[in-house]
Length: 188
Length: 154
Image (cartoon, rainbow over all chains, first blue to last red; front, side):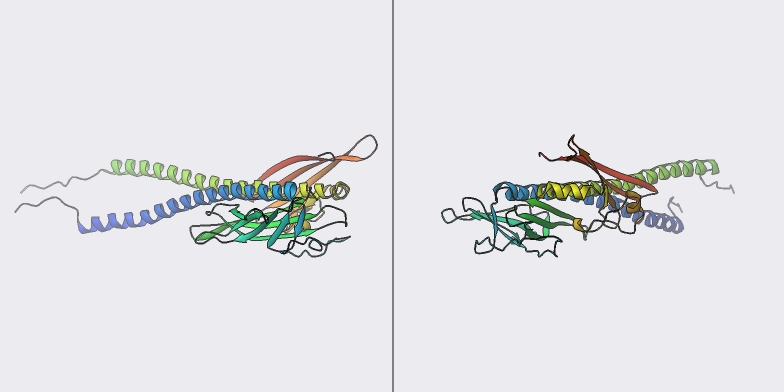
């Protein structure tokens, strides 16, 4: 009777056991590194998009906006005169603006169908149909868009405070980045 | 009847193999640990840089609103911005800010040091600001800095 050389059952069990111990550790480390890379890329993307949105809003407010108005286009009493200590600001999420020619701009938080929340800018007047575009791309969500405006005297320029948070989901966890800035209108 | 000798590895061979494997595994583990630590550091640095630039943008807004008020604001020399909103910044020295209990985003200490410069008539015409965001991780202290100068004529 001829015996063929082969592994014994004990040898196989030991080998499978060792591989079974090492593989989960290797995969855990591998996925942790991949996750970190994704988080890093997410932050880079959020900073790029958040800064672009911030620049866009500052440009609209600083160089185009003459008045902050209500929904009906009336500017009086929308931005209160604040003297002395600043009261607790009242934030609103719908920003209605007008330039010197009466052209309207509406900035608001919007969730386009099937994508992430963003800030939408709709602009136009009676002669021109309103055009809407989104300030960020769908791979980043913008949440908590709020603004507050005031004047330090009746004839002083309007000051607008803006807040929003960028959010992205990476490996079942959310990463967020807050934005907060203040702009003085130069055209009013 | 002859005794059959089974072929097997000698102790020396096994020791050499285990040593080489250990060196390889230790090197791999070190590289992985270092890489993960560097990635975390890069994420924290990216956020710290963002927090610096956000404060600078806020200060630009303050300067635009009213130069005199901004100069009054900057006269306090040092302010701590560890709260969620800029308006709730505290006027403390940088040491007090660093030793305080508040953390921005649970990790960072952010403060700004203001230095005002007067012209020959004694009027403040320039405010230099140095923004620091400091945090601690892996036994080390890291800081990102941002310097800027605000002037009356901008």
